[in-house]
Image (cartoon, rainbow, N blue to C red):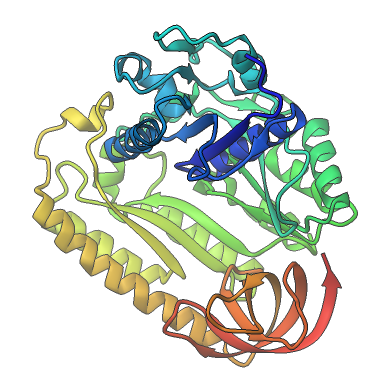
Length: 444
């Protein structure tokens, strides 16, 4: 198929790694002469970067695919990513899909499209990901905006948590070569990008398969690149947090003190059933250490409620623990059965009504914690990377502090894609902190 001049739309579900891979596929398509458009603009090619973390994520992937085919029966529908990897047979039987591309094959997207010949039977390009030890070296060479870039440095996971399908969808730990990471960041920094989010499926395992480098070493080299104003990390395993690492991070002038700790539960017996490799005492100590090295760092986490077998006593233990450690933000998820995982067949599945009640309790706590943390910052002057004009408020711009506090300020002149100093004034009911613009720092 001649794809030059064709129109393509890409939609993304799931995590920051998926977003990075979408950005890379967009770059590949544009370099091949494909016109990137919106899903509603009658594209010739419709790519869904799927997610498989829950059954609901897979359902959303199918819904997007079906919607596209109903709207335009002639569109070439391409399912890529995690659901394409673990659900190849299900997608092949779906009847709405033309191409199925698994993980570690996205780098071949252009060739697969060019070789495609419509014959009514979906074609599948899916590797045995468990046996593949190569890192899929995608590259983002430009972005639509110059504010923030996701940089994928690692893929795969060796943890095999009992609720998680990702090791089967992504394979084992594989790290990207340091020079490839640095080259990509140098290029994007030269093109005006100022914040870089270092991400991976299990990002803190970076380098364990390379031998002589670890994530902290990579971060130190990234921090030296001209134009890199901010370095932000994705989800962190507690084992990464040591006094040595925190000391080295605290010396990086462009490191953002925002630590997203992968917690999942605040009860040791639940953590053991999840096959997590730490205890609540470990988490308590990590939080203490972070707060020793950084002034008011933002600590955030993910929590699953209603995991199989979770009793009222275990939930209450989690609630008390979360009250104790006082995190800035908590993302609360009701446990969702994921077929193919050990947890899916565990005894004592928790009823949906009880999951909802427990979720509501923690969501209320999360709202209180978030407001308290933001109110404690009022009166301080913070650097804010402005991302866009605030919808519905003329001459107001919104962005994030280094702690990832969403912040808005008024400016007579455009300040989007700039780092500015803002004195924080009030916590808005609309999900951001309002402030007063001070001196502009640097244009991005």
